[in-house]
Image (cartoon, rainbow, N blue to C red; front, side):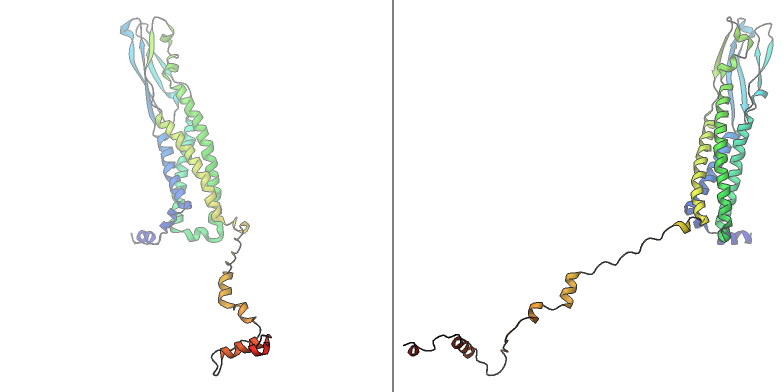
Length: 292
């Protein structure tokens, strides 16, 4: 019990949240649905043979069949409508090969999914070691994807044949008494095939899941890593030119002014004298007497 508790404590259950583990859980569930809906099936149909002599009629002929659908071994007794005699009639066809092949693939897919999930959870580091685990997983996944394709297609064809062989209208043609016009033969109840239709649907769903799982297992192998290019380095955004100019450059007009710039704070500076002196230098008359 302690060993089990340690394994549970050391388990990396977060792998079930990533596509590699999550899709394996889906494969585990749908594999169960596929082989259980086919392998546990049993059906029945009912017919009525009404003879001219009503005492010889049988209005409730029940025919039962089940997996693995060896219909040639299924028989029933029908009235001959003559002297209360009965004839034994066997159904036609043996469809066990396609049905058993489909169920076998489902069982093995369930077992492999269980094993793979256990390795993912408890031995993921060893699974990644030397890249052998992902490569083996990839090969087995590819085989199962192909097997689901073959088995689902074969079982779909087999199911179509089973439906034909168990159709009451077709089975009535095997009864000798139904060839006489004075006798009346009819079907009473058709077999329910919804479970078998579901099994075919689950088979193709498993096909899609296992094909999709190929990509996620392939990524774990690291084969694609050398071919993946690293993204180009992103250039740093250019600094604001206007901000840099305002921060580091002085006003060009302030440094390029020429001529004399007086300092107004010097002692003894007379603004009016400077203005008058400049006016005289320009050739302006200094007094009214000079003009005369």
